[in-house]
Length: 477
Picture 1: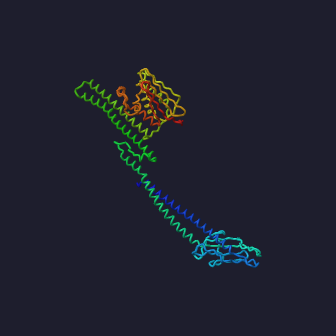
Picture 2: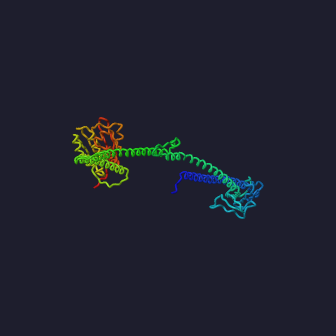
Picture 3: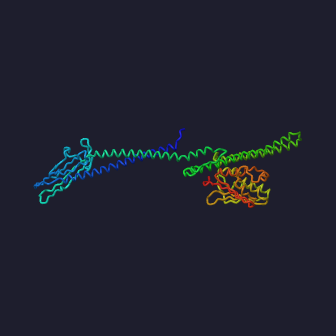
């Protein structure tokens, strides 16, 4: 499958944006230059038209006729091409026109605008029409009938077109030069800016089961855009390293736990075969072997249950869950552990503020509560009490708290008690028949239901286990 290059996309974005900018500058420059040139030409044409109007004179007689004095005719705006003009008086009619004036009046622009563009003989012109212009010649004592003038004056606009072409060429060349310079600078900046990403990719490729550290230099760590990525990668690698270590510990601990009952079973069977035995000795040996096999079977069941619980916690398995009462589930677990508690003279008290609906597998919760209660009872002194409370405050999650009066857990052991096969006191745990999997299974099951389990303990002051579970806000039925 074809990939996408971030560098190529950035380069194309820069090239397209800079090209659009160059085209925009070219068009804006041409538009502004054209307006300035046309405005200057219009002002020059206006001045020439008024100069022509100033050359109109009244006749010496009292007829009121006018004539044109061409002795002071102003020069053409474009020295290479003559201007053209025509003057009409309101009563006298056509007064004069330039030799190159076409027959008849030149037509005005659309809508009768006073300024417009036209073409005469293949030459482009810019034209102006002024009406109601007074005759400036007013000799005192003359008798005349006042008249007004209409003046049409046109000047070639060839130089504007030439200047526009020159301006377009200049702006285009300048824009292309700037385009190449800015694109080259941007490409250099992009390539340099992607160096930290290449460094990050190279360092990430060096990560292995023997090297979980991401060795990043300051050129990567100082890039603010990469900081969320590097932080996430470092956190992810730390978790993977931890999981890898836990997996290795799990395999080693599991092998160690399996080795003991297998070795004992093997030793028992070898001793039975070492010499002839009586029927009673064979029976005793077989009973011991069955006891060791039972312990081995229990360990395997707990390991399988832990694996399934972790799969549920990570969403790998889907289950259709029924709605149960959390309080009733705790009450059932208390009754189940009552025999062990009575044998040690321990009292278990349960308090609750009412039913709490929850979608869960009853066996899962029973396993969690039983593990926590069994630990609380076993490690509390004889005749002590264990307090269990089920509550919910302000519509939040349900809280199930187990408080014992045992010796507590050392601060160094407290962060590790939920790990698989962890034993803070191996001799005591083996004496009670545990495998170090109970709290790990409880944690995995609680997390599978979106909850949390935490432990608080101080040596000599007992241990408090707190389970938080989300409550079903829409009970069935």
